[in-house]
Amino acid sequence: MKNIYFLITKWTGYLLAFIGIFFAFNKINTNVPIAIEKLVKIGIIPLTLCAFLWHTVFAGNIIHSKNHFFENEAGGANLAFGLVLIISYIFNFNLDAVLSILMCFSIYIFIAGLCKLKYSTLNSSILSFILSITILYFVYKGFVYQKIDLN
Image (cartoon, rainbow, N blue to C red):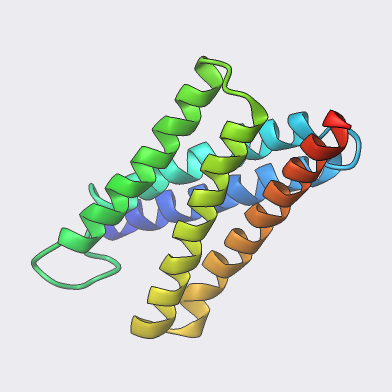
């Protein structure tokens, strides 16, 4: 039964991430701050919270061992990114701060993809690489927007 909850949280998280990306792509050329907000609120925050669950509560489905240390560590990192992003919107952090958090999350996801590639299969790492590169695209657009807006 634990396996089904793992799959539900995993695919719910990725589905919401790509829905957030879809809405963000629709706004990125007209309103960058709104695009980033949609990406974060619809996509990244739910993904990180779901990833926390699938790495901790439903641990053992990724690394099949009795010791879930690394999965719990990954879950904690995901929870940290999610909570920091929630706090960034509660306390009205500026766009640069949110973009910096997203850049760190993107690097984390890219490294996770490399680990999956080394210890698992190419198929298991593709989502991580696509997500990481897509987030970096939005980070780039956000920083370019900030630079143009300042001039």
